[in-house]
Image 1 (tube, rainbow, N blue to C red):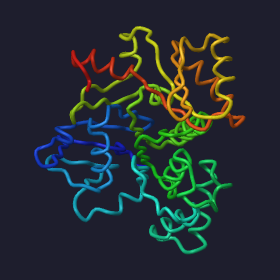
Image 2: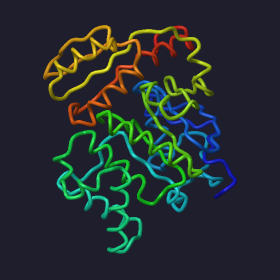
Image 3: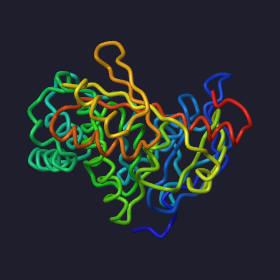
Image 4: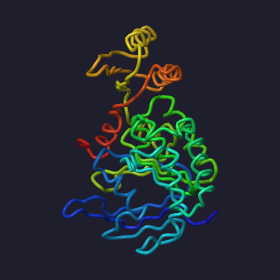
Length: 311
């Protein structure tokens, strides 16, 4: 393993015409897990694209394990795995065929690509779905395929852009465990999210972006001390949700709930970790199909740091 930092950015900037995507980012990341926090439009995906060479910086530079990213630089990207926020699948391919193709692009022989694809699927708990076409999968399953693609060549630097979107509680927990295990092997993970709770589940270290600029860097515990307890909302879809809703009320895990369109159940709670533990139990038995968290804490943090709305 290289002794150089996993990542160094110096005055890294990118504009889209007159729109500022990222401005003057200077940061060093050694190893472990770092949360990249920010609402949509804050610059998270722009940074991911710069780190993977998909776009060029207008100003500043990036180094990955001591190697400067310049046009024509390719070899260092063999140490980088990237699960993008948007879907990049071949919709009519089976999961295993998509991953075999990606492995072949990386230089594997036919047999090597097959073995690598199956290993990656197994790592994200999707080996049993190897023969399922991607357009027949739920959003959460597709997310796990993207993570499997990012892990194909066992990267030293793993970049995950909103990896938990659309996952059910069980898949979320297993993915978070996988992130911790990957970092435990001495590797580095940068996990982008607009949900504070998701990042907090895997690390206390964070970078916070606001309108393309670095707003804060440090530990979440230092910021959490500034936040009073406030109701949080989780929204789920699944089976027999009215029965589950009654149980949650009886257990005092929620302080309010309502049913939205298409059977969506919105749950308001003052104890999100306890509620998520209970929802995970229901998810193990197949009762919950999807989970989304409307985490207002991140907006509260931005309000505290910038003295106004984070929007």
